[in-house]
Image 1 (tube, rainbow, N blue to C red):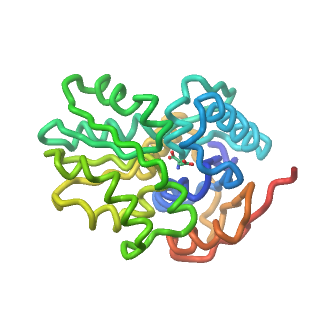
Image 2 (cartoon, rainbow, N blue to C red):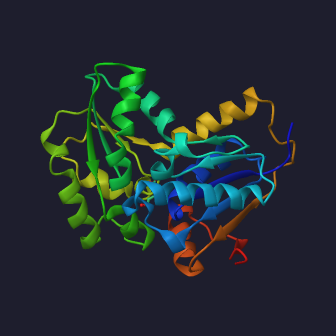
Amino acid sequence: MDNRAIGIFDSGAGGLTALRCIREIMPNEDIVYFGDTINVPYGEKSREDVIKCGHHNIEFLRSKNVKMILAACGTVSSQLSYIKSDIPVLGIIKPICKKAVSVTKNGKIAVLATSATIKSGIYKKTCAEISPGMEVYEQACPKLATLIENGHISPSDSELSDALCEYLKKINTLDIDTLILGCTHYPIGEKAIKNLLIHKDITLLDAGKEAAESLKKFIYENNIQSENAHKSENIKYFISGEKEAFAKVARTFLGYDIENLISPEK
Ligand code: DGL
């Protein structure tokens, strides 16, 4: 048993997709969330800068005495093997690749993710390690996380639709049956993505959701679950940039106003 909080970080609101699922499946766990919104988007940064951000975020959460960390960010997760930490840090990529490989019927998977993540080739590599012979098409979506972070979420939003039309153009010509939303921001815009997919029977997979399940497994396997009684709000949110925009996206996505929104001391 370990009553300390779980740390979660992302460049911004994307990690909320994992947080929401963690709340649902492990309501007793306290959470410290860090959204590095001053540095969003991570997906357009160099590999070195992504690694630096990862180290910084882990250091910040360690200073809050968390028991373990979820890198709820595909971009940082794509470089996790280069990031050192003396407390456990889980990423989002392996869980969702396992899921994709298990649900695809025709072995044809596509991935939407940030430029940095796609450049790393991590989704293709991880799917191939789990099950050789999978066909994985990777599509970079340079503007998507920033659009979502700035509240362009609605399927009727023209900026969001224009960007998505571009990113889904090739995918709409392929006979994939599984689409990985490989950046944690993307499930926030899932309705818009679904709307623009020509083949409506494609299964969309949410990296945050699969990461939450694997985190639960890790916690129980290592016997570090919390015994804290369920409380209505056991989450602290630290946001490095402007708090209002984050609060707005969080409200739309989570469906309630978040409390305990804090600016970290500089
Ligand atoms: N949500 C993050 C990811 O999963 C980062 C997106 C970004 O900041 O570009 O990749």
